[in-house]
Image 1 (cartoon, one colour):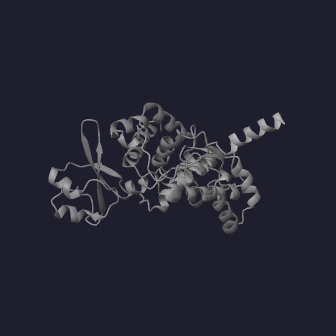
Image 2 (image 1 turned 30 degrees about the vertical axis):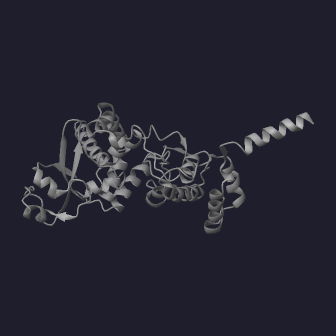
Length: 333
């Protein structure tokens, strides 16, 4: 009798009063499982088993919709510091080696999609240090936690969780074994699951799309991603421009999507390089250092890079690292 009572108390303590429970305990998760079975033909019992392995913390509904801000968020980092993380001698040297080892594949991708090899290598260098750091976080746990937790982007992550399960089924991948970034990005190219499904390509024709182990697929997929976002072959990316305070106000140096053409800006008195055609659409961005601010004239290809990561600092780092890589690689030929 005493043993039974202790067991009962332990059961109550771990199931009723615990803040951390199997995700299948939550109604929202059950609704999601039912939808995946109904909409995509998943085996409901299999999903119940998989999801039961992931635990969730009970959410206080009074604080669920309040966005949390990290004390040291990347958004507060200066452009100078952000750039210094990635544009380093080590990353340039490793990038040149990667380029040399995959020269043919990069050339094929550049020929097919119009995206320069240097840009592809730079993105791989920034995302995963050329595949060395692909992420250590269990992706299913990451996505479930963000989709049904306190993230202000729960709807976004719910869709990514859906894409992840479809991706795993389509590619015969074990959902519980896959690891990625803390935001759910995957493989060499750090594609989110929906991007993996829509933009990843089998670039070496082995009848399998593999961004975790196949450098060829990663190279082709990055090029395809940028091409699908209207990369302009041989197009410019960015250049520094000097603007006075009045001109900066006119340019609204905040948004990287080109919307007005060069003629429009010239008519407002901005000194746009004469080599740029009147009908070329341009945008302006500001990048803040600790002590100063730079204004850049940007073209469509800069905006295309921001579709990979919406941070202007990211796109500028890709561009500047690519220039360093191109110079270093050319010197080895």
